[in-house]
Image (cartoon, rainbow, N blue to C red; front, side, top):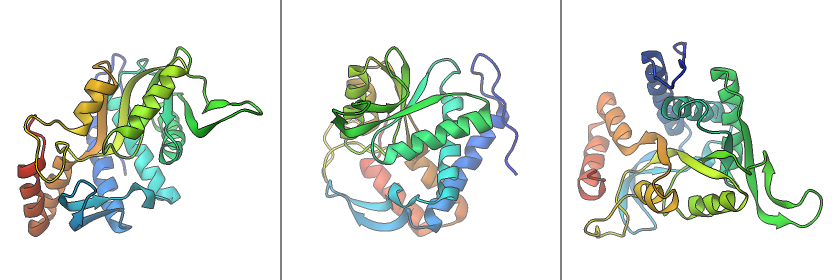
Length: 246
């Protein structure tokens, strides 16, 4: 049974809420592993790096799995963002659409927080209601963007630019996984920064924050607790070479 969750006014996080977030994080890791959305081993990334793990959010495609992920998003949001600091959840097409809708439901169901949501069309319509946005109006609204991962930050950048064109103000980004590694290819660029830091600084212009349900360090902690020594060693070696040192 999940621990009770309470968020007092002013945004102070209770021990119950922190405990609930840890439970959601663990449930997410174990569920993702069970259906193969999260794998440990040896995987070649587009960057050319050989990663000891791989995450494919597209496989989180059932009701129970979406409930697990959206519940984690909702709890992370009320943990990291004060009530009254955002008005709308935005899910970039296509993966973000289900995330935004399900998380809005979980915020209402589990946290008594009535929040609207919206998403974008890949191409603007010139008939019917038209436009780029489907759902809640973004003009003058404070927006949280929900997506699965940040790799190069391209999708987030496009979403933020579109929201601004609609008159909205992005106050944060929430993702399922933060790889916590510096950008670049096989060789690390001196002074390089993570994709998350790049989004915070160059996309949100220091006016918003990026938060993740699970970070690489959380995966390392889980592996250690589970006694998966070989996988844990591979993760530690990868972290030593590519992990953020912030």
